[in-house]
Length: 326
Image (cartoon, rainbow, N blue to C red; front, side, top):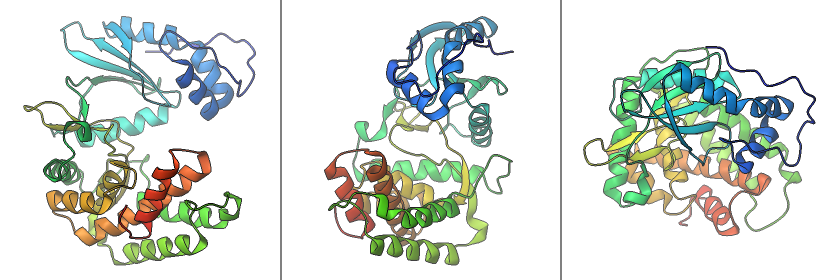
């Protein structure tokens, strides 16, 4: 279906306070404009009518907006048949295409949500809505839960052997290249106890090079890409652990597991969690731990660059990157 266009009115790029809408909070509207500039403002100007148009086309009863995302509008909905659903619309249709491709690979598993309707040109997906949907660390943060999450990630990886698609990138090489760029720009970061040194950057690059040089090329699979607690949910005893919102890329499966270990606690207890995840998935424990150190430094740089998290979180990420307990 065609997306309702925003009116052709002049807008100012990167406005300090974009107008909230029925479905986009002020915080979400600001995040979208920061990311997309004038296109984001035009998109937001028409988003309420766009959501209403999808509700009519797909015969949905709309509920309340679902908050938490930074680049998409999410609205709870119910289908004509009474099925709980989530309407997701993004300003960049390529992101919807990528998510749809990943969910299509994972569709044979009960460990991933299902796509109920789609309009990829309009950047819209109607997704299965889980009830309950609890971040897995809020349900249980013990080692057995992490082993269960490891088995869940393995089940997704096993479905996606020999992935393909024009929207996939090599996540492990992407992280390496990003660290190389960060090392060149390190002098722009403020000095401080939680800021990586050039030695930290070189150590992480050495680990990354060793992992890339020794990996089995047949181990390239479609990765979830962002298996954080907000995207790995406890959906009740019948359904178990279910993943949502993939950020698909191709790479070594141990890397996906390492991302989960780091983002489950932002640097704290990563080694223990990496070991439990690796045990559950049946992956090499040492490779998961080494990837965790690389991922931790990547996030430590981002936290210091953009002001994410607090001092304790950045310190924990840096300690993990250095192979120390945090």
